[in-house]
Length: 304
Ligand SMILES: Nc1ncnc2c1ncn2[C@@H]1O[C@H](COP(=O)(O)OP(=O)(O)O)[C@@H](O)[C@H]1O
Ligand SMILES: [Mg+2]
Image (cartoon, rainbow, N blue to C red; front, side):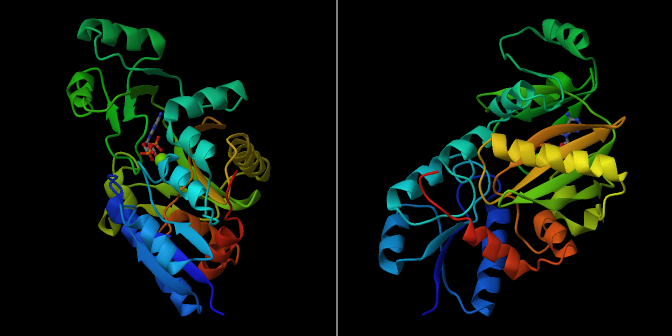
């Protein structure tokens, strides 16, 4: 009998379009390989879709809010069918950049210095506080977004203006800007998958640099690092994955500067379009797209 996989994609986050693309690519590949596939949205029909289709496994192809932060995972736990990627708690921790950083620091994983922006502070106070803490430039970002949505690199002159773009978020982080190289690395099923370097042509690895092929971000694999450094990178990646309690596949985003890796975040629902980084890293070590999907399905579970 054919295995039945229900793919959940789309959703309400700002990464909806990327999620639809992830879902589409995964569905196409599974169908090509003899799986019975149905795709659905995480909406009010979800539970009846599951009841009707009775999948062997649920593939979570969502990105961002409601899909990557423990919400959908909580619903899926009640359903009792194995679902892919991290569970409730790990997803919630990894999606919250403030909680993640606290965990990284407690476990001696280097991450850029930061503080949570207090919208009540006067402008003058803020500028002098930043200067005291780590000086300019700084990076501002929502604590619970992805795909570089609403991430801005700011100088003293445009910090206040840029902060206005983030006024609707409950929490905003101001981070020390780390120059240097952009390196990302992946884990699957507690195994080190590998790493890739990104060389954006734009000011940084922003939304356009990530998804618009005209932006021409260069992908470099293998990453040019001394063996010892590469090993250290993969060790930090696995340590972070494990201590957050992640499952299946994760991708960690680093800045590499003056011989040190600064962990920015762990993504528990990394993109799975054919142009995404995890499929590229895995293809490099000989795991093609369907085998990558199979590994993710193998790790699917509940109650973890
Ligand atoms: N502290 C920082 N220093 C330098 N660049 C940063 C910093 N934080 C973020 N960036 C840039 O912004 C991108 C997105 O930031 P990240 O924290 O990974 O958020 P997202 O969840 O949106 O991917 C990074 O890949 C990097 O290019
Ligand atoms: Mg990132």
